[in-house]
Amino acid sequence: MAQAPLQVVWFKRDLRIHDHAPLANAAAAGPVLPLFAIEPAQWQSPDSALRHWQFAADSLVDLAQALDTMGLPLCLWQGDMVECLAALKARYGELVLHSHQETGNAWSFKRDQRVQAWCHAHHVPWQEARQQGVIRGLSSRTGHQSRWESHWESLMAAPTYPAPPTAVAAPGWEAFHYVDVAQLPSLTLGFDTTPCPQRQRGGRSEGRSLWLSFITQRGRRYRGSLSKPLLAWEFGSRLSPHLAWGTLSMREVVQSLRRQRQKHADDTAWARSLRAFTSRLYWHCHFIQKLESEPSIEHQTLHPALRGLRERDPEHPHLIAWKQGQTGVPLVDACMRSLTATGWINFRMRAMLLSHATFGLGLHWVEPALHLARLFTDFEPGIHYPQVQMQAGATGTNTLRVYNPIKQAEDNDPTGEFIARWVPELSPLPLEWRAKPWVLPESLQKRFGFQPGVDYPIPNDFEAEARHWKKMLYELRRTPEARDASQAIVEKLASQRRPAARRGKKAEADNRQQLSLFDVGGL
Image (cartoon, rainbow, N blue to C red; front, side):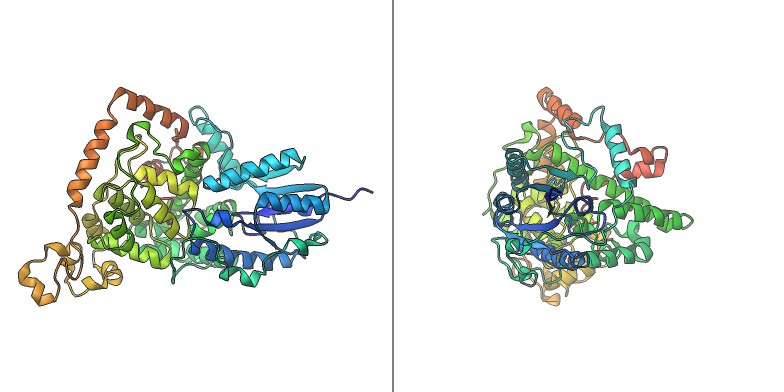
């Protein structure tokens, strides 16, 4: 009797055993070799950081323990994935490669192309399963939106895959296990090493605990707390890094959420919050589809008429001050310092940080995008780059949303507590001066022991700068050529209709249409 081919399960951003189609299919087909490739070139990408690796390392430890209950090891190969496949082919002969589809950054896209070419050349089947509501090869959303919606709904409604109770481990797997699980947190792979002392922990057990607390307690105040940085940390789900690294699947979260919506249907606060969260999960996949359809969004301004407006300068003084939380604008600096320390900030403050960088400081969007990518523990390329371009006004198709940080402080940090916590040099000032300390009268400077420009920077004229860039962008978008380019972008990338499951519900439809550009980040 012929021996079954080796079933290689390639874990990427799907670090779980539950609702994992590649693992379930492999376990049913033959001896299994679960594999995670630690590829140094990936971690040397300019959008990679220590906090990403630490979250992934936590999750890999958890994954290894879960696989052990099935009788399987987790092989940690350190090196190029194509070289790993070649070594596996030489050792085992026939292979079948199983993985989930991934919409990652430019590096992972090119890596997957090389893997696909190798598999084709060596007659190795590569079975990729969907885990996001993304359609490969979708060239246009026009005329296909209803199909996109139905695909999303079908995927989310389909039964989840139970974790296989047992599986047969590949003999000799030890030869492909380069790193001990206990060593993972200490690996240095060339990424940005900015520390994140208050980061979220990774792993499925952490994700499940966080989700349980959200759907049973914290989530009731979700909708009313989204915009406020202090409240959002407590009442937001903070599930976004677990979705980004796949410790929980999108499908199991959507199904759990729908069960909770039925349970809380008679409680208005719960119903509105859970409905809002469901909307954001839909948009999560919608934005990833944009990068899948147009990978150049990562590095090139989407609208051709808007390219070359700002020079990309990694040493620009404004950029350095923004990165360090020393712009002189208190809410901007508080958000940057908080994000650096915790790896997470709520959606409205993400939008404001990008808005201030590109409009208030006149910076090109690429360097701020890379810096924020390194700071977000929940960095998801398919969400990050399209939303950065939208917030920077680089798509040419969306209403420009420029967030005034003074107004945002008044609306979302009315007590000044968030600013005082993260910009302690301003804590001696009364509330009315914390959002704009540069206008503190000289008569009060001595009383409070505070001198603008000495104890805290004086900002640039960010309001005038923002007006300049808004005027310029609107003028550039008015030409016939620019309008034609805008229409082409809309047809290729824009959502043409509301989700089928939500049509006819005006309140939720309005909510979908009014989503902030960063509503699906910082869940």
